[in-house]
Amino acid sequence: MYSNTVSGREAVLAVYDEYDAVCAKMAALNYQTLSLPELLDLQSRREHQVRCAPAVDHGLLAEMQSRTTAAEIGAKNWADVLAIRLRISNKEAKRRIAEAANLGPRTTVTGQSMAPVLPATAAAQAAGDINTDHVAIIRKFFDKPPVPLDAATHAQIDADLARIAAGNSPEILKQCADRIGFLLNQDGDAPSDEQPERHGEIIIGPQNADGTSEIRGRLTPEARATLEPILSRYGAPGMCNPADEHPCTTGTPSTEAIAADARSAAQRNHDALVAIGRSALSSGELGQHNGLPVTIVVSTTLRELETRTGTGLTASGTRLPIADVIRMAAHAHHYLAVYENHRQVPLYLGRSKRIATPAQRLVLHNRDRGCTRPGCTCPTDRCQTHHAKADFSRGGLTDITDLALACPKSNRLVHDKGWRTRLRDDGRVEWIPPPLLDTGQDRTNHYWHPEDLFHPPENGEEGDP
Image 1 (cartoon, helix red, strand yellow):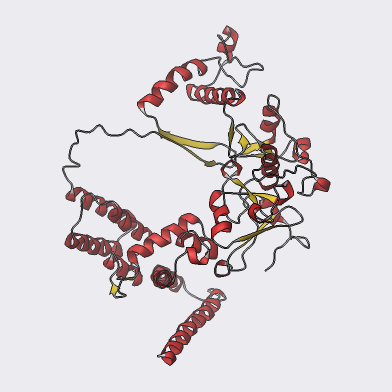
Image 2 (tube, one colour):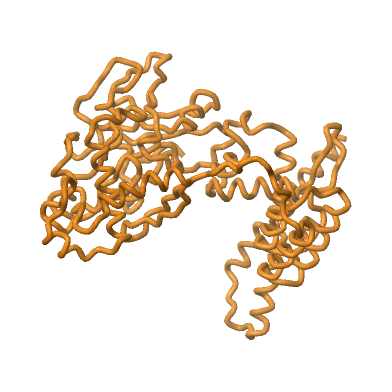
């Protein structure tokens, strides 16, 4: 038994060594001598290889999950394991985990092998007949089928969709899946005597290159009824016009202000919301959130202020043009943090308490800008203060030179999952993962400091390999 295990292990590693060597040879190939039909044929073969690859990954993941749990190797879940070790996005990691659950091998509690949840789709993927878009459409159909499916119907639809996908584009597959859904439930959902719950939502998209953001959503009747009189007032012609030297925000705008207002109704609504938000922030009634005052907190540099170029970063992760920062600062409460010789070490703001003060959090925002764990995108207002040198329960100090920003999830990694942190002399925080998650990756989070990657690190700035 021992010799068979050893020989099996050596065979697996040998195949992977051969694969690595072949990949290196393929990367060094020169295709200039091939004809166009040959190039197109090779492209089709490469597509076939890429389509087959996930089936191998599903098998690897299934075997790992049968050995241990994500928590035992220092991660919150298996998506975290993939994201940390492979340096892929959390969204992609979750997609791979979910796909493996549908298309990967399974075992019973007694260790017996079971077919995948979608065996026909899994077989088509392993054969290289379908791509990731096909798989996503099929999985989406079965995630929310139009009606409950018995085993026979489930298997038949899986086989039909896999067969259709193998010979058609994702667009055609989507049409077929929608048609199957209609045929299964032609009359629609049964009427309900209960009043359906109304859900409102507002989604603000990421910032574009020019700093603007797309917004979309849905208002409940109550939300619409609440906003309409406010917008009719503050969004009226002549009101809250940023083009005016002294915008009218109370009373009735002058005839001249109304006549000079060239904004559309949509633009007036936008400026009305800005005025309403500014009024709420300046009221002083919003208190604190995660230890920070509920106001617009901006981190920037003296050079950017003096040259009036670049951007400032808010505690919520929004980038503001310096011109906007200066204009907004004219009617704001100011906080100033001074650093020694342009190093990111504050001169003094120490406290000997477990909970950081608002002033300390303001300085941490200016230094860290967000969660310090590599790859985390949580801005300051979603973070906690973390004792980076030593935990408070182990004698750590709540001094500004000992603290760092960390989101709740990252904080738990240190307390529960075996991660460690340390502060470098330049103020950057390093996160050392547990051994099984350590692939030699970068220890610091460059998401909030991309400029760090624009030049080679100086001596002493890098973490241990």
